Image (cartoon, rainbow, N blue to C red; front, side, top):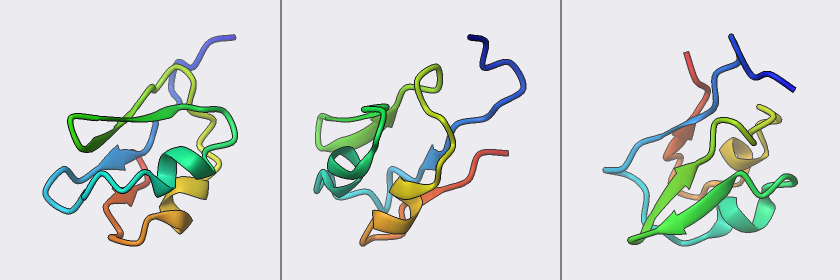
Length: 64
């Protein structure tokens, strides 16, 4: 399945505290916390928006 043209969410690393709430909420395990920051696997991300809603720091936004 190709993700061409489908943009993953964007993590603002200045706002991200690495709390893991987004990682726990992601239904497809597309987010991992590495070095205390959330990292999104664009190939796995299905753009459902769960992480955007779950992030307490509002550090995750829709991709362009």
